[in-house]
Length: 159
Image 1: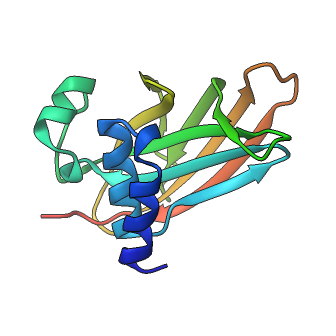
Image 2: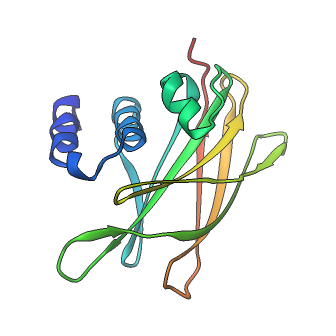
């Protein structure tokens, strides 16, 4: 998907976006297309980005540490309704990340709510060119079904 299409989609979605949400969609669109995975009626949106892409004021507002060797995983969950619309859903969320040496971090997710937008952000440190592995377990609000999701991403320092 090219940058113009991503930009057009962002403008169409602007009524749902918050400053942090706009930031997350912009960086995910510039670094890679918006990533998501379906779990029945739920769609988990995710991105992993360096904190140097976050404006200092936004990082301060949400208590995020910026640095060339620091990154965040950003998650949001939407439920697809029968009428074709989607709605943000809370989730009970646990997650961890590790590298090839098995050095592990368990996430203490920050929940960000602004208007109808709902995001979960986990911070971690990394080494340049390191492969990071992520494992997430979540249960959507109002659901008894739990889901698991795994991904891997190679991290690069952005100077």
